[in-house]
Image 1 (spheres, rainbow, N blue to C red):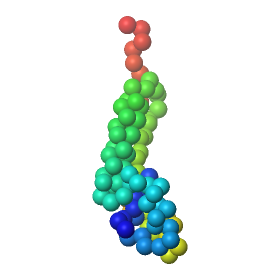
Image 2 (image 1 turned 90 degrees about the horizontal axis):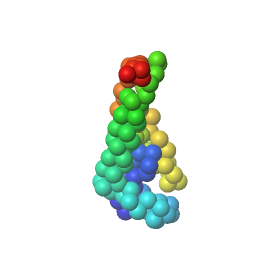
Image 3 (image 1 turned 180 degrees about the vertical axis):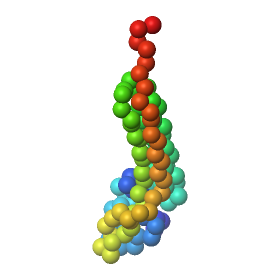
Image 4 (image 1 turned 45 degrees about the vertical axis):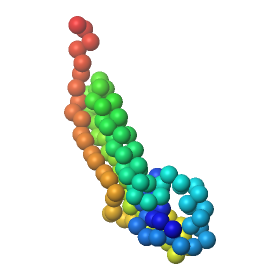
Length: 104
């Protein structure tokens, strides 16, 4: 069985227990390196979208856009849990406040 990836990150160990087949069926598109690459690409696309969206906002406040893909670990019973302080991908941007001149 290959390493299984989830939408909350990826599992760095190989799953080999009764939960493996269920996870494999549920996350068909999230298995192996393709699963990790797909997940990171999705996160990058979401980050880009929200960064560009927030840059268009008319605001007097600072805006922070943050994306984080956490690495996961496998518990002895086969369930996934988040590894503390380990990430597959993360990015952050601060957007300065700005006002558009709407009286042109």
